[in-house]
Image (cartoon, rainbow, N blue to C red):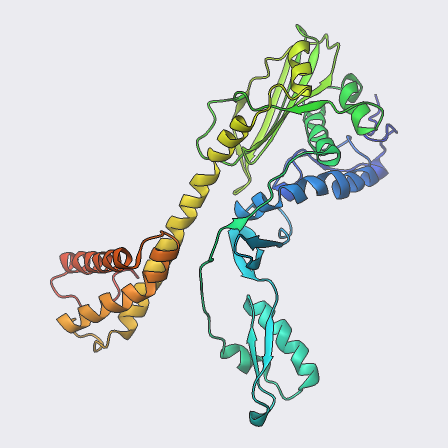
Amino acid sequence: MKPVCAICGKEITASDNSEEHIIPASLGGRRTVSDFLHGHCNNEAGATWDGELAKQLQPLILNFGVKRQGGQALKMKVATTAGEEFLLGPGGSLEMLKPIIEKADPAIGNTYKIQVGSRADGRKVLNGLKRKHPEIDIEASLACIRVEETYLKAPIQLNLQFGGEESGRSLVKSTLALAYDAGLPVDLCQDAVGYLRGSKAPCFGYYYIGDLIVERPTGVPLHCIAIEARPDTGLILGYAEYFGINRAVVCLGHGYQGEPVRKVYAIDPRTGMQLDLAVDLPFNEEAIKAIYDYQMDNDAGRKAAYDAVWPAILEARRNAEWERVAREGFKYAWDNCGAKPDAILTIIDKVNIVRLFSTKIFPFLTQVWGLDAHTALTRAVIVGLEVLNLAESQSAKVKTRNPLV
């Protein structure tokens, strides 16, 4: 039997076949299925349905650092509750929204003060200025860059809205693709096919009154697509979950009379690693109608799904930032404590190291950990002394070498 396109219904030939990602590539999906969509239908659905889904999930894509097979996720504009505006990048990085270019005193020539979010942005600005001032030495100017790091004055506001016709078609298409990959013909999934082709109503609903993933891995912002065909109920069901937060049940078709079929495709989008999961879809016709009527969707369940992954990610990010700040703080302290090279550290050297280290980590302790000034300073001194004591316990003579390097 010749394959037909799940979207347009026309026969697929070798010249117009395509590889359709079961989980959209923009979300980190890798596995593909062929003989499922025409090339132009694939491209159009990717630009519209998958594009809308990726747009809605963009804050999560960036914050969780999705690892894609090709290309980088686009940065997005975000704002804090204090009105600060930034560009959110992969891994939750933040950059200035746009460069600030100020002309210095004309009496000292064509001199500019430039603030940019990255070295690459600095090069772009300098290239633009060079067209007006050919004498500018771009490489010499870049060599004079001074890096300044600050923390946000207030939390970032993120819109995590999920739903709608186009993103709904994307998740239905994903479950239908996995069903086809599991050996179920497209024409058995008339609810899904009709919805994708615009002749039937939406065939999915959100599910948050329980967990359909058996023994869910703790703290993993996983993607999961699952299908189950059951002759006892006659239903072909699907399940789509993104980042462990957005969860929907799909009814692909009715009247199934074949052998039971189950299949799951799940990944950790941060690494692309495939996960071995089981998904239970114990629904009959009555339950599916209840799901369609939003009877199995509630705010408490959505919050629980969010809280299962988001706080752990933030905590891991804070810990990584603390390690970076502490390491760089000690490097700065060691390099600037005034000790002579290869000499044994004196009491004055150690006092200087703790003082300089405390200065460097103070902003983190007050702005990220939220400590008051007195507590932050006390904590910084204690950490500095702990590292020095650790170094002394490892060697009877502590020389001017950073023990964290």
